[in-house]
Amino acid sequence: MYHNKKFLALIPARGGSKGIPNKNITEVKGRPLIDYTIKEALASDYIDSVIVSTDSKEIAKISTNCGAEVPFLRPSELATDESKVVDTVNYTIRELKKMKQTFDFVVLLQPTQPLRQRFHIDEAIKLIVDKEIESLVSVSEVRDHPILYRTINPEGSLVNLIDQNSTVRRQDFKTFYKVNGAIHINKINNNLNLDTSFNDNKFPYIMDKKYDLDIDEPFDLEILNIMVENIK
Image 1: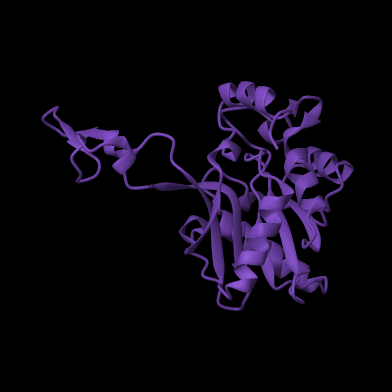
Image 2: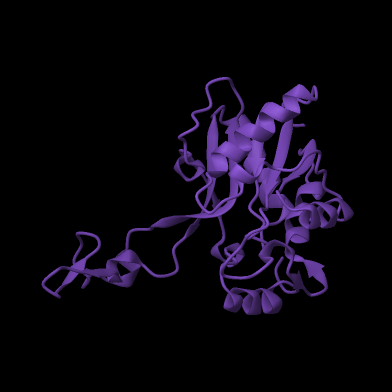
């Protein structure tokens, strides 16, 4: 709790994954991937409850062993490749309300961003309350500047992604950020738009890009194995 506001940490972890089978519970340095997110959420000074939303009994068992709560399994229709995270979030909030558990904010923590630390979570929580805003998303400065990005038109020619001359000096580059998927925080109210994308949350919480590692394919796990013991 922070300033009398209750915070729910929600970790979505469906069983199906294509790029890496059983990705959310793949072991990294002897720990399931999801444990890296669970442990940081549990260590937060302000999180009131840490809940994993999953359709998998195996993930549920591992998550509870790691210290999270799994009060119910997610319906199969909310665990497909086409399912929207916001629908899962709203379902979880509704079910918890039936169980007399209510919160002021939901903190969405994707288990595929395992380098996020407890201090990031706490800083983001303080920011959204102190600024009196309703939604926040973590961002990191991009590694490759979009001034160097190109698309290819139907004629086969390169087209600049942004309208800026690429001869500009690097030190004069405008700063660009990417939504990194590590932290999304939304105020819970009766008007939560089911078509909302959490990536469209308006206020930024800026994280150092060294903490931005999205686990999407096997090579990302190799990087994580190198970084996980050295990140601070």
